[in-house]
Figure 1 (spheres, helix red, strand yellow):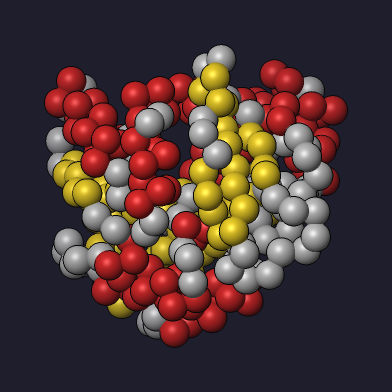
Figure 2: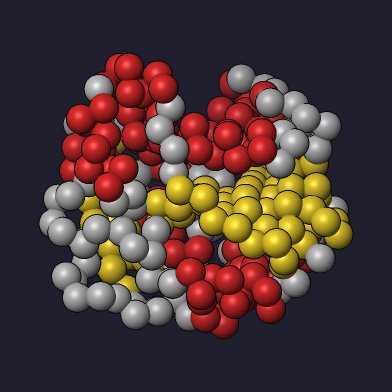
Length: 255
């Protein structure tokens, strides 16, 4: 992964968890991920690998939902430091963290499930994307599931379109091609993160990388909005997001 991407996350590690207070992250991102996990049988009793775990928000959520063992990996040492500190201060047990590049994964065991919230858009080439998928596959048992939530190939490129949701996209208004670089930023309390460089990948490119890594039964799902989010903020608040969501969810299985 790019050192520049790693360094940008190093600068926000201490404040990163505040972004989970955003209505979008609670009522769309987390809700969509949890619903998808429930759809494939939940995590209770399963060993789970959390790739691009950041400060461990989903790592801990997976453990709280019954995973017997969770391993979180992230490129940023500072993110992992914050995650480990949280585990020390509020131990859940059976959680371990590693600083690692998702494009060159070691084998950390045999897992029933792999989860990645924001990952594929950091791949800088199709070969890199395929390496990420292969590393995940090497850590999964046969039939194991992979669930990932990330940037939508058809997201809106209009400036400030997602601003009210605490997200901003910085991209040319022309249709991007596979491998094109753009950037996004997210809100943390009263400040914005630096612009994080990311790379565009079409549905076809992502499916190709997954298939080459031995994944099958690939299916895409639209982001969902929790009823609580609609009740709290109103349907009009969410209308622009429903019209053009900036993220999508994928489920696949290792052969």
